[in-house]
Length: 378
View 1 (spheres, rainbow, N blue to C red):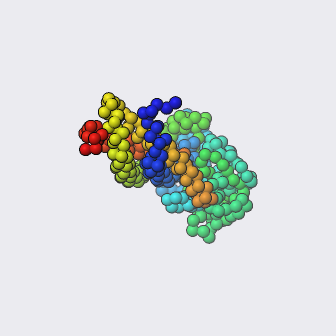
View 2 (view 1 turned 90 degrees about the vertical axis):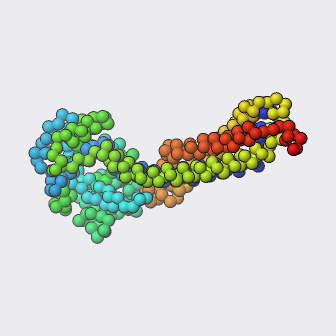
């Protein structure tokens, strides 16, 4: 049995007064979480599109079509190196939420393709692997949806401005995994693209992230950076976060304005509802209940409707984002994490600020409360 003065009693007896507050908080949580999730999809897309870089170290020549042999020998002598495969690649452009981005189709030997798939935890789910020496490729299923290319269709065409291939490349296999990949035959790229640069993919002796990071650092120290560009996952993270820093600054300012406005509105509503209950509060004060108890009771009520609004807002956010992803984004191969923890962290200031603002207004009213005057209707 609930105590007569339990904060939940007001909810049960006055749902029409509590519902608007909960509804406002719920909509505010959904607004903030949806905006943050959509913005955060930029980071998710980059880390999925180029996430293979965490499992390897990429090497490309600078001011030349090939990496000098002495630089390659330096890398081969490193004790941190497990395998080194030459890569001669094609490239296509895929559509993302923030514009077109280059997607490499790595031309590798059969051993190199197998190593890349194993380290990246990517597997073939449909079709077959490209044959050696044939203009064929296998790409991630999301990329195929993004490009609207069916299995057996032409993936890249020399007549397209978004494709950088001298011959039509046919899609023969679909891949699936935590990152996006595209693979083809190196001998085919060597034959059709003799004037495009040749790089290397370096793998650590084992799949340990620490081993790969150690290889990153060893190669970074070993090569001449005027001749070789080193592509490390740490650099990708740094460049991504640096590029998004201003965007997140603007986002933080916008969320701060939203939080202040919603907190102000909810604080006013809480104050209005409290004013309507002044006779009840005055009676409790007159029969001996301390103002501290009354304030704690009001705090319990505020915390309850803030918690209800935040939970319902979170559920509404998940449902809304699920519909957006299923109807608008997934068919186009675009990414959205409906359970993005960053988005829900951004919503935490909402209930906290609302509770503090409402509590401050109620505490001010309690400090000047004269129960006798209210009871006597003076």
